[in-house]
Amino acid sequence: MNGYSNPDTRLETAIAECDFMRKWPGYSTKAMRNDIDAIFELASNPDAIDFRDDHRRGLELLLVLEAKRAYDERLAGLFCDDWFDLDSPADLVKMLTAPNQPIPQTLLWNLMSRVCGNEIELIDARQMSEEIAIRRFATCSPSSSPSAGLVWILLGRQPTPLFYIPDDD
Image 1: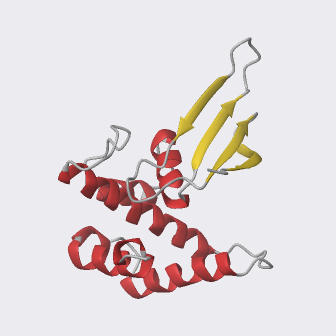
Image 2: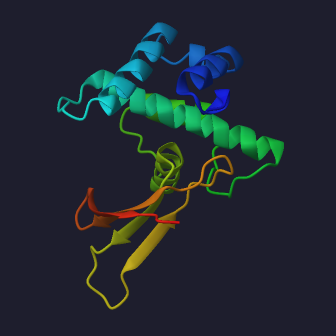
């Protein structure tokens, strides 16, 4: 595993390079390190059922780290579609800390796709018509190859996982 794909290394790099990480309101760098550890502890324990506040913060932190990677790739001219339309990852931190400010769905789904390393398909079945809206989100990263496809269906306000399709390439 290269150093940039290791979340602890990515966190330390982001803290060292990005002033906005150290100035995240109410979030110390020590708490960031603890939350990253907590989210990976949760992921490594299949019997865990309690989703705590530090897990939520850890997921938010992973999104910011992935936004930083997408931003760095775009600045370097490497690879990133135009879905990452924020001026910087600091804008995502502002969205996460602002009360009642939603994260744009396109940005959120693409970041989740990149963090998970999976392609995601969102089927919007809220409107009964002949054509159901289907949106696909790819991992958008040359460093990761999608391992599977995740399908979600949107019937109400919250999407629900529909099924898992393994990629047998």
